[in-house]
Length: 90
Figure 1 (tube, helix red, strand yellow):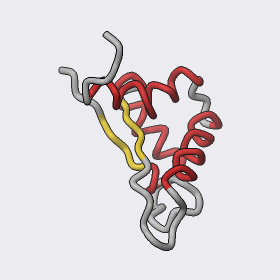
Figure 2: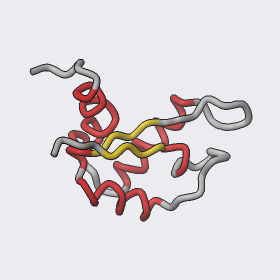
Figure 3: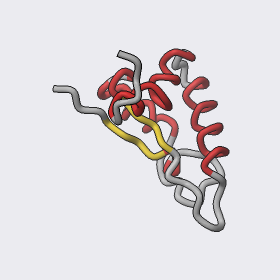
Figure 4: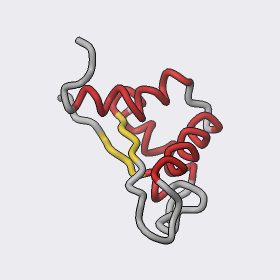
């Protein structure tokens, strides 16, 4: 149906004051729809927590450690979001 599932890395990233989920939960959420339908964002930048860039770095490292390929990670952090807002190559 074309829907994407978006997940905030703020809930998964080590060092985020919003962390309340595990890496295994992140894997389960991604696997529900697959990397081709998942968007990962940071939702960070608030006072007293890690920066958005650091959140993305940690989220990417987590995804790689969970066994997702570089191509899968690129889909989840860049390509899928670009497609949703009309910036992806046709």
